[in-house]
Amino acid sequence: MKVAVITPYYKEDLQTLFRCHSSVAKQTYKDVTHFMVADGFPVNQVNAWNCEHIAIPNCGDMGDTPRVVAYAVAAARGFDAVCFLDADCWLEPDHLSTMVGVMKESNRAVVTCPRNLYHLDGTFMAVDTESDGKEFNDTNCYLIHRNAFMLVLAWITKPNGEGLIGDRYFWAEVVRSGVPIARSLKPTVNYTTTFAFHYNQHGLPVPDHAKVIANLGDGFKTYNHKEVQL
Image (tube, rainbow, N blue to C red):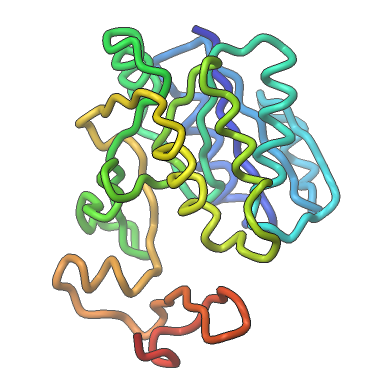
C-alpha cells in the first residue's frame, strides 16, 4: 500500500518542520512519501529533504486548501492511501505500520487512532480523550484509503472563514458519509498542546499562555483563555 503523508505548513520554525519531517522519514513502514505544502511561505531548506515540496499562495484557511492540493497530486500519482500530519505534530516510528495493518486486517476505508498530548517543555501530558474516534477525531489521526478519497474534499467545501474548526467539519463529513471506520487503539500521533481545554480535561493547572477557540459573534478566532469565559 503506497501511502502519502500530507503536511501543510505556514510559518513554523525550521526545527519544528524538521521534527515533523524526520518522524515521517523514520517510519518503519517504508512505502511512504511525505508531501510538504508551503501555504504562502516556502522554506528553502525543505527542498533538500526527502519529500515532495509544493508551494502555493497563502489561502488563509489553516492548511485546508494545501491538504487538498497535495491529496490531488497523490491521487493522480496512484497513491493507495493518505494521512494528514500538521507541521507541529510528529509520529511514532510505528504509526504507519500500525495504521496500515489495521486497515488491511479490518478491510475498512478509514482508520483512526488516539494521540498523545505534550506540554510545551516536551514532557508527556496524557493520551487525549477528546479525539476518541466516536465524538471527534483529530486531523492527524486518520488513514484514508483511495476508496474513501472523496471525503478529502470536505476540507474545501466547508463555509469560508471557518478554517479554525475545519477538523470538526471533516469529522462530521466522515460520520455523515457512513464510510466504514476501524480504530487503532495505539496512540502513535504526538502533539504539543497550548489549548486550555486539554489542561482542564486532565485536571491540570491551566498555564497563562493557554488558548481557546471561540465565536464571539464575528467568526471563530483564537483567544487567550483569560480573555474568554466559556
